[in-house]
Image 1 (cartoon, one colour):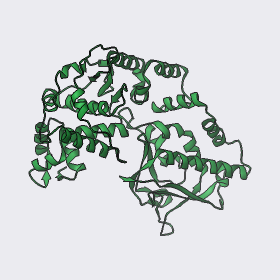
Image 2: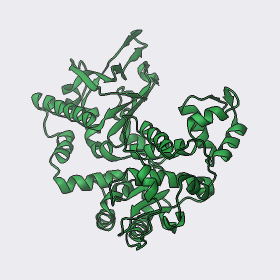
Image 3: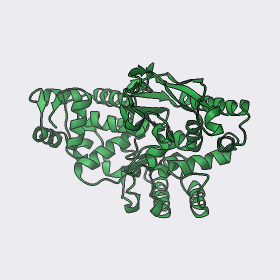
Image 4: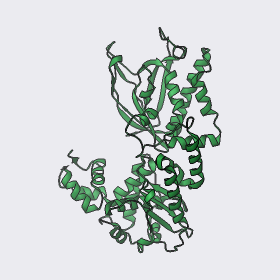
Length: 436
C-alpha cells in the first residue's frame, strides 16, 4: 500500500447531448479521480478503441451518493460485524453511485487518521468499458473530507447556476452541513453501527444515547463499531461492568512497573503496522535480549521479569466476547487487563496487544483490543506479532526459501502464536515464499 497526500476529483463540465433529466443534464462532465498521481478512472473504451483517464457522466448521482453516505465515510470502520453482502460495500464503494453510468470499483474506508482507498480492474460489458487500474493508498482523513466537500459544493453550485434548485442533493447536503455538535455526534454514533442516522428508529436512537451515558468516552467509539445490534443492551451493560471492575479494583501491586520503565517513547510512522513493529523490536532490545520464545503467559512473564502476573488479570466477562481484551487502570493507577480469548496462544497474543495499548497510553486511559481493522488495532496486532515472533528470528529458523503449512505450524508452536501470525510475518517481511 502506498502512502499519499494526493487525492483529487478533477472534472470539466460538458455538453450533455441527448441526456434526459434536469439534474443529469446540468451536471454532465468528464471526471478523472487521481490517487497518488495514478488515475483510478483509467479506462479502455472498446467502442472507440482508445484508452483515457476520464469517464463521461453526470456528477449529480455521485455527489448525492457522497452526501447520503457522508457519515459512514467519516467513521464506519471495517470489522467482524460487517456483512458479507452488499450493505457495507454500498456505503463505501463508488460503484454503487453509477445509476446506469460508469464508475470504477473504488472503496474508501476509514482507519482513523487515514482513509484507505482500494481500486481494482473492472469490466462493464454493456457499456463496452474496462477500468484498467488497480491499487491501494492511504489518504489523510482531513484531505479526503476536504476534497469530497469541495466536490459536492461544486456540483450544488453548478445546479444553482443552471437554475436546478431544491433537489434531493440540496436537502441532504444541507442536513450534513448544518448539523450542530450534538447532531454530528449522534450521526457519527449511528454510522459507526452501520445505521442511517436520518432513518433510525426511536428505540435504537434511545439505546445509542443511553450507551453514550453508560460507557466511558475512551471506549464508546470502539463499542459502537463492534456491538451486535441484537445484543446491544446486553453488550453495553457488559462493557460498563467490565470497565468498572477495572476502575474500582483496589489492588496496589503494579506488576508492570518495571516493564513500563524499560518501554521506549512511542515513535510513529505513517504506516501503523510499522509503528507496531518498531515498538516491539525496540522494547525487546531494551529488555536486554531478543532470542527468547514463549508458549504461554507464564513463560512470557518470566522472560519479561513480571512478578505476580496474575495480579494484572481480572476475570473474563462472557458478554464482552466482542472484544479480544480490555485494559485500563484502577483507582490506584495500577494496570489491569481482562483477556477475553481462550487457549494459550490466543491469550498470549491478546495480552501482548493489550500490553502495547497500556505502554503507549496516557495515564488513566482505557483501551479496547478487537478485530476492527483500524490504525490502532493494526498497530497493536503488528506489535504482538513482532514481539512474540520477531521476523529476524523467524528468518534464521526458516529452513528454505519456500515454506509450507507443516513448517508454518511447527514454527507457530515454537513461538507460541497461531499459524496465521507466522504466515503473515513471513509474507509481510518477505522472508520466504509461502506455498498456497
